[in-house]
Length: 324
Image (cartoon, rainbow, N blue to C red; front, side):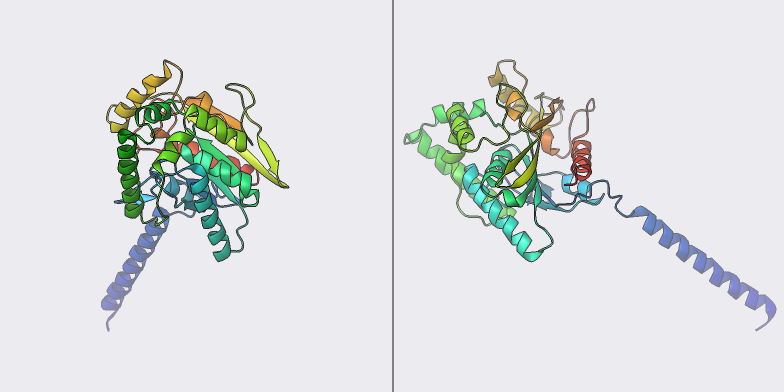
């Protein structure tokens, strides 16, 4: 082979090698290694409120939240619990799931429970009866003191009445459908137990049984940690203080309506700001409604306050900094 041909071949090989190297670098640059910013010592378990699906038709209950946390190092699980049921029953389902995860991976001892709405009460039950499973509990928008909409529903759909029976059948069927679509397979729910639990009387009864972490004064702050059966558990909460945050979000019209039940008091459409207080209150006045707290619908939220994903990211780092 003459010299010009050798030179051309060498140039071609060099060019191909350079392009391969650049392509490899570009691919590696597009998927950077996790930064570790959200890498907590204990896994994060996301615990849903009512509806309680993990994912239906490709839409997650915790919209983009798991991905955000995992992208920077967190290990994240999502609970598989009834869409509609009382918190004690859902709590037993969650306990079984946590025990199963530990059985599969013995390196996991405890979890950081991060819970929305009714998930907060579900997790309070778990914390109270199985504190060995819980490193921390964070609630957001959880109606610890009850929710006005529950009193309305319980008074309209009175138990053992025709309307009440129809309500229980319809809500029960909806819950079973959601559980099936989500692939949860967790058994039959209980619509009446759910409704009664969040009435003023129902919340008071639940709180009397499971008081750990609650404020002792109206709209006060709870303890930043508790020790239950020898296990130290850090406690946090945050909540929203607005009902209508984005005109494109269909949930805003629902929460804008239900928020009227609070007669002007700060709320997220379901939970009063003061009712969301539990443990150390990070903030109770985010410009978020009950759906925004889980980045729904499809990430639509106000442009004039903190992005929900940033709130979760920052909190995961808070847990990491606390050694959790």
